[in-house]
Amino acid sequence: MRHLLPKPAERLALRIAHRLRHYWRRIARPQLRGVSVLLRDGQGRVLMVRHAYGPPQWSPPGGGIARGEPPEDAARREMEEELGLRIERLVLLGTLSETISGAPHTAYLFTAQIDALPRPDGREVVEARFFALDGLPPEMSALTRRRLAILAES
Image 1 (tube, rainbow, N blue to C red):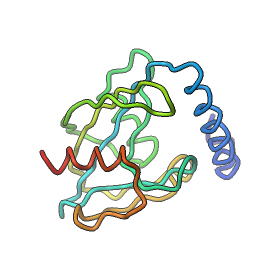
Image 2 (image 1 turned 90 degrees about the horizontal axis):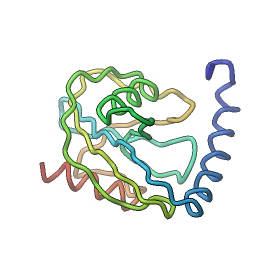
Image 3 (image 1 turned 45 degrees about the vertical axis):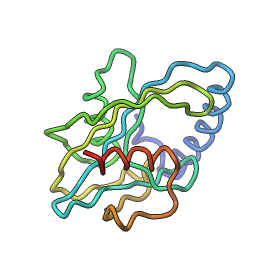
């Protein structure tokens, strides 16, 4: 069904939905669950993406976990939907308890080695790029820096 909506229209809808979801989370404070996947290439660089919505910062790819969906399945689904990548072997680095938009959030942090190039979907993800751990972009959130610190420790 998503393919019926032109990419620019979907990006606009995502920006509006993101803002509304931000306010809803502050009021309702639902318990959220999501995944972040730190993908590494053969040179040890980490893949970072920019989303079509939210702050224009670099972050690891990931997304929400559907009700009843195992975190590992959510990670695989998000990588395929947003980047066209099929991930065979995921390693769970750990879980983080944090707050996003005023709501409690449990983040499942995975890592995986990839040998294919990501193909951003142009809808949710508009840019994807590999960075060396000692050459990360300055435009990153504190949550992203926390995730990368866990990767560096592993």
